[in-house]
Length: 197
Image (cartoon, rainbow, N blue to C red; front, side):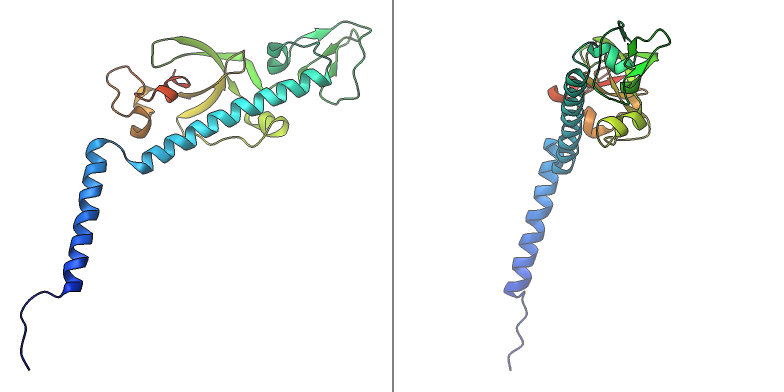
C-alpha cells in the first residue's frame, strides 16, 4: 500500500467552514451589526410598545367604566373627584370621599409625590413618575423587565413610557451603540424613550 501524505478532502472542507465562521464573526463585530445586540434592542422596543399599548387600553377601559369623569392624570395619580349625584356602575376601584363624592384612588399607577426629571438623548427634559409595579401587575399586565438593576420604567402624565437609568454609565453598550459624550444612544427609536436621571 502506498502511504499518502496530504490532507483529506474532509479536513479541507472543515477548515474552510471554520475560516468562514471566523471571518463572519469579525466582520459583524467591526461593522457593529451584532445580531445578539440587535435582538436585545428589539426586545426592549417590544417592552416599550407593550407598556404603551397596555396603559392606553387600561386608560380607555377606566374611562368607559367611570363614564370619562376622570382625566388621564387623575386616573394615573389616583386623584380627582367627581361631584355628588353622579352614579357609577359597581366598581371596587372607585373610592368614595367623606363628602360622598367619588375618587379614582383605586386606579393609581404612579407615585405622584415622587417625580423625577429625566433627560433624553436630544437634551429634552421630561418630568416622569415611577410606575408602581404591584399596581401595574394588579390593574394592567405583567411588568416588563429592565436591562439591569439601575434602570426602571417610568411614565409621564400623558402616559408615555420611559426607560430611565440612574446614570449614563449604567446604560449597557448595546443600547448606547456608538453614542459619544452626553448622547445617550445612537439608535433613533431608543432615543425617544431611553433617558437618564
